[in-house]
Length: 98
Image: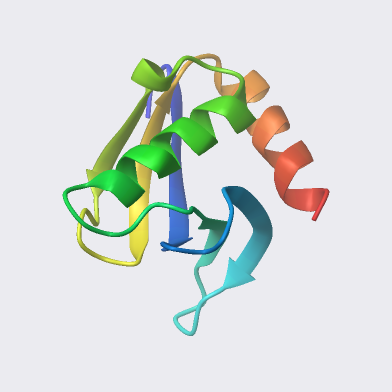
């Protein structure tokens, strides 16, 4: 994606706290960022909480993070607007710190 990065996330709603739990390898071989949020998966609350969490981790405003696929699925695809090298560095730092 030009002017940003695409990110796959495996979300656990009602996870007890809002946090990023590192990287997980799915059965199909894809790597995803694991995240959990306190919000329930109703009326888009968990998705909204995920967008805020990822924005904070990437150091961008929440408006720069969009859900592009997986609104009702556990594995979601996000688009983050901004400088790709800076975004990747911020996300790697958070993911690898776990």
